[in-house]
Length: 341
Ligand code: HEM
Ligand SMILES: *[C@@H]1O[C@H](CO)[C@@H](O)[C@H](O)[C@H]1NC(C)=O
Ligand SMILES: *[C@@H]1O[C@H](CO)[C@@H](O)[C@H](O)[C@H]1NC(C)=O
Ligand SMILES: *[C@@H]1O[C@H](CO)[C@@H](O)[C@H](O)[C@H]1NC(C)=O
Ligand SMILES: *[C@@H]1O[C@H](CO)[C@@H](O)[C@H](O)[C@H]1NC(C)=O
Ligand SMILES: *[C@@H]1O[C@H](CO)[C@@H](O)[C@H](O)[C@H]1NC(C)=O
Ligand SMILES: *[C@@H]1O[C@H](CO)[C@@H](O)[C@H](O)[C@H]1NC(C)=O
Ligand SMILES: *[C@@H]1O[C@H](CO)[C@@H](O)[C@H](O)[C@H]1NC(C)=O
Ligand SMILES: *[C@@H]1O[C@H](CO)[C@@H](O)[C@H](O)[C@H]1NC(C)=O
Ligand SMILES: CC(=O)N[C@H]1CO[C@H](CO)[C@@H](O)[C@@H]1O
Image (cartoon, rainbow, N blue to C red; front, side, top):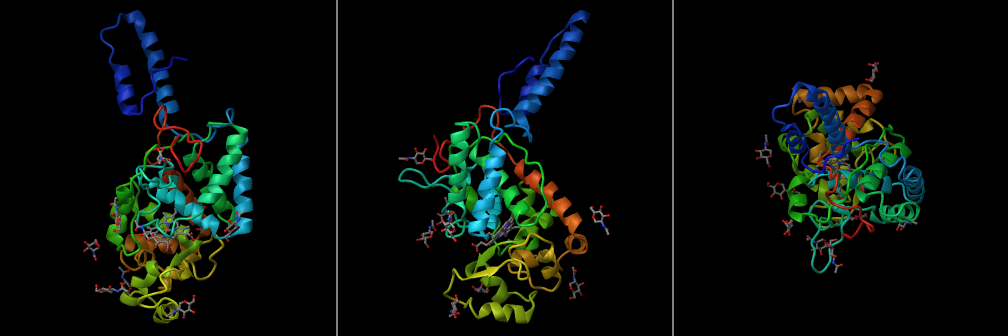
């Protein structure tokens, strides 16, 4: 097969391959073949695929799966934490493992950005899995891909849907704390801010509502839900009162409450049911119900039909996982997820 130089700008690459001048008739067959090859190379370089490691590291997927099963057995919450980490990776300059880089004396990463500081967790689980994968296939599997697989396997382990994770992401050598500050929406967001934040990533209102269903698992800190329980009117008063007992107006910032008050360790559709009864934990959760008929209809449809929620959630997870991956020769395969090579 004809190989073209690897380029990260796929559109440009195909355009370059089109720059053919005048051809004698006999050359058109060749030209056609070249165009087919160009399209094939476009796909190889620019798109992720589920079988990316099937010949270079067939052990990768089973190692991640076993690692996630063990980690969740040790601590159920970490499945939620890993799902969130993948989201925080993808929303900041694409799914490139940037969220995993540690700060050091000469480098400021994303771990101390506002949405992550004292909140992002699960890094040790990724380190353990990465070490095992490196042992099996040194220098082959990216941290960004391990995180995408960890998110999927966590969802499955907690009772949610499964899907084929598209693979072939490479790891960044840099991170951006300012982009993490601004690209990840805060829990105080209203509906229009949430819609804009997702639109900036190429994600729709449907993606916003489906992906917010991730809050069917995991916990949030008092500091995250305080504005909603003290200042908002679209909240059930007795629900607000019970939360105020451990989350005072000031202090106890790290006290935790479940995002889904009914089944916080089970991936199901009860998150949406909470929204109908105004018992969403964060302002950003409750904004999805009773602000617009579009989101109201989506919420109601997921309350009525878990399979529909799972189906849309999977579609949106794949879409989120495709945000600006580094492919071809861009980035690197980190040896240690916490540090650029
Ligand atoms: C729609 C906008 C979103 C906002 C404003 C938001 C905000 C938050 C906040 C504030 C927390 C609690 C953090 C803390 O207090 O330490 C949280 C937790 C969580 N978020 Fe989101 N989130 C959003 C979307 C998402 C998406 C798209 C996903 C996954 C695809 C996700 C997955 C999670 C999970 C699983 C947790 C629990 C983590 C744990 O227990 O460690 N969130 N989110
Ligand atoms: C098990 O979970 C605890 C948190 O509950 C964590 O501190 C510890 O590192 C975990 N152990 C392993 C082996 O993952
Ligand atoms: C992160 O949290 C720690 C502990 O609360 C705090 O000392 C530090 O200033 C925070 N970092 C940033 C960048 O906000
Ligand atoms: C991110 O936000 C925190 C808190 O507002 C601030 O201390 C920090 O300087 C910001 N970092 C960047 C790089 O914007
Ligand atoms: C939503 O939040 C944005 C940003 O904080 C603000 O500018 C806007 O006025 C708010 N919109 C509504 C309808 O409250
Ligand atoms: C409630 O809103 C007021 C006015 O905007 C603000 O000053 C205060 O900090 C908010 N309180 C909480 C707990 O978010
Ligand atoms: C702080 O949280 C603890 C539970 O973790 C609770 O017992 C205590 O009453 C809370 N303090 C305040 C002032 O709400
Ligand atoms: C629920 O959604 C699934 C998936 O879209 C669909 O096949 C099924 O017909 C729906 N069930 C009902 C009762 O609407
Ligand atoms: C600090 O972190 C950056 C990014 O991971 C890395 O490139 C650099 O080598 C690190 N510096 C040290 C002294 O470890
Ligand atoms: C936009 C929307 O759904 N608004 C509804 C919110 O709930 C009240 C009653 O609780 C309705 O009257 C509104 O139409």
